[in-house]
Image 1 (tube, rainbow, N blue to C red):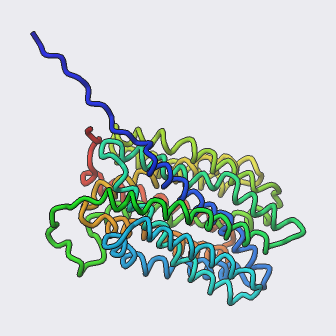
Image 2: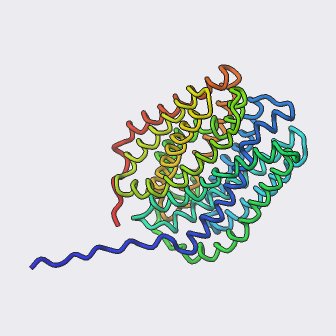
Image 3: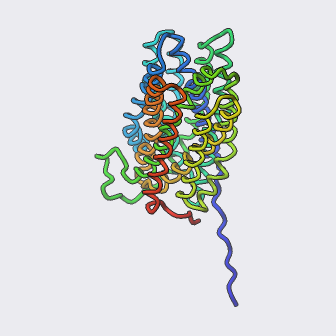
Length: 397
């Protein structure tokens, strides 16, 4: 008689710490999504060009990029949730600095916010790496990135609506600061969970503290960079593009993109566990390419919204899948270092991508800038094809 095989129950995902983590990170990203879309408009109001706006975004990105390896080491040696709390506090302070209406203050605030962004994301990703069950990492990162990405549904449109009102820019900076401050007590409440969840791990050869970069996650980092490098053209410069084309109500783009991201990330994150990281990444980068092509060809709101749908799907799938891949590859003894290394791809993409987008906008126009974004995403597909054999297969419980 053949013995009955009982299916192993799936490990619980929606624990209290996981839910609190998603809520704290949602508030941190809400701070950023209120802030980021208006930076080019604010710089323009102060007399700066599109290239200067790109430099302002780069000023935010450089300290975040440079400090992440050190922040990752602190998360490993101290407490990842504590690092996240400090990051949220710096984000709130940096937003308040923007109340001083000087172009130089945009750059000062960018440095403070960049350090805060490094702490928020490194602490968040490291906490996620300890909370996500191995067999449900794709699904966990799908929900996590859905929580962070859902901030795009209303907050960019809210920021643009406030700017067009009688208050102008200052109320936007106040709202941004309040959102980050609201996440601070939640992050502090997670510190006890992080201490309890810390488990001793065997030493990893070559993983000593002398190295602040985790080479094991460089594949995930590079693949994510190919996606994020193209995104500032829509995240930060789409309002200027719409103004040039005479298109009103561009805030609907952010609503559609955010809603699409919110719905698609958990579903396809779960699918990436079952079908493997490679096919999921191919789907994400392919959808992103279609989206940029539609935005490039647009002359009205319809094609821009269609492009927003595909860009959102592509960026959501690629971001959640590369995050799961980084968790797969990061060593348990140095998750802070590994996730800090991986998260560099977001800052490199935001900073270098914004500078590149601003330069292309000044040289070949805003429409030509989107042609450049399409080329960058296509390069990502080439990188994926070359690394296909190195990607892990479907997860096992």
